[in-house]
Image (tube, rainbow, N blue to C red):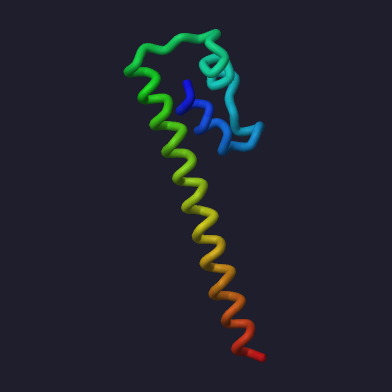
Length: 71
């Protein structure tokens, strides 16, 4: 449950599903295999989001450097 809490903590409230809340609150019980798959999906989504933000930061840095060289 602690891993699920940490995974959910990094997401904005609108990204947390009703299913995730039910699992975290103990209202829905998952077997260890299903829990592992669920956590893997959360981690995969988190990695994808982080990667997208990193690409945006890199693109902004390149654009900013290009703009400064034009002055």
